[in-house]
Image 1 (tube, rainbow, N blue to C red):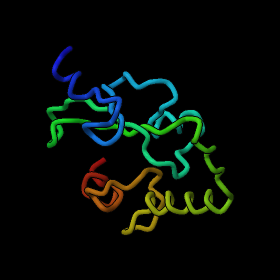
Image 2 (image 1 turned 135 degrees about the vertical axis):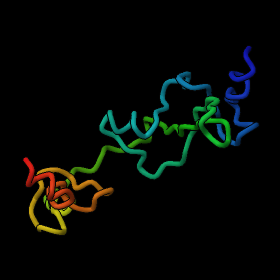
Image 3 (image 1 turned 180 degrees about the horizontal axis):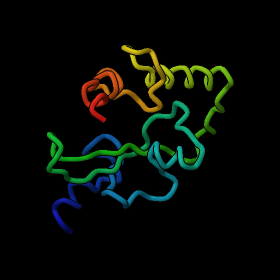
Length: 128
């Protein structure tokens, strides 16, 4: 058994406090948040049931962790109400509106510029 695999395999939860499995080797009945969402489910307030772990050079701690939830305890996703859709539409409109010219740019204003491209580079628009 490889050392990396052995560090990430703790099905009893003695080492890490919760059952730990190597990456992509979780038993049936467990899913991450993204996997639950793809099935139209949400954790619904249940505690973390287990975790997936793999070694990572990018992370400061040296490992990447993904939490797992029980699929049978998951609840269906709440549907969007008309008020939520309206609030989302207004938020997206605010992200597309230029603070300088007050026009809808048709795209999300880049945070690096803070305004639409036309207002950020007016000299280039005159030359074209």
